[in-house]
Length: 104
Image 1 (tube, rainbow, N blue to C red):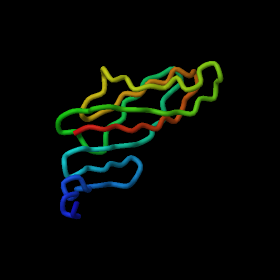
Image 2: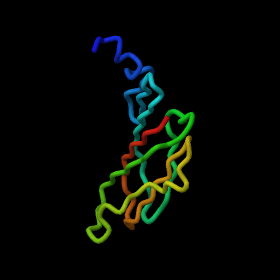
Image 3: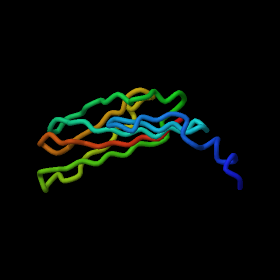
């Protein structure tokens, strides 16, 4: 394969910050960020770049301080849109949650 054959999938736009994104030439977008979520709370965070068509998947990690509820952080996919991600923290203490989303 020649180098030109890879051009459609190479980066078309990027923001290597936090939050940030990488938009591929074929339309695939990967975005990431972090936000503090209150104890036993729910928080929406705005994607740095709107997904034009759909969110294909999201993942979240967090640092729990309570061993009973360690790592009970998740994405509320029913309330995640092309412009916002909804994060849920089941730990009774506020946590910093890092997220990543893929879409087009």
